Length: 156
Image (cartoon, rainbow, N blue to C red; front, side, top):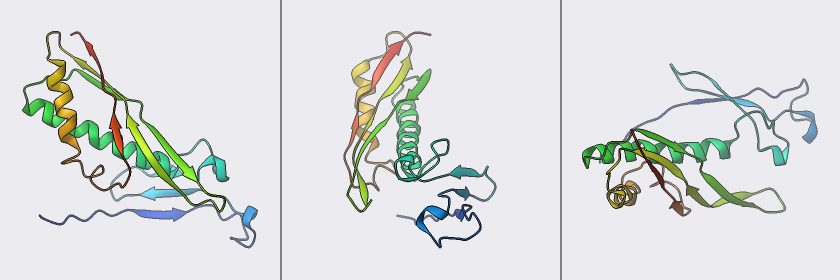
């Protein structure tokens, strides 16, 4: 297997003037700066002092997992002769946090809604989902279960 390298720059932007001299005296905001791509403004989970209007690390992980699954579904569906007309997902992650704030994901459920042409074999589309975790970079890297609850609509 060939190795790949990915880079990003994470920059804390939450110094309110006195750094981290007190726990409540700084903001939990930061940016993701990937060369040649738009900057992403982020914050901590709102449950632990973050800005609810910004993406948290948990949001980004869930989105990465869902996006990777989608891209592989489109690829493998095309290879299988299945035409995909539309795809959206409303994934849900369940996590836990201890008293000291340390947490982890327990499981994720991907819930894609996929638009297929009339007459498409739904069982074939379901079979594609079962192959994705063999190849999806993100799914192969996480240590929690990922369930798929695919829904289909048919039309043109």
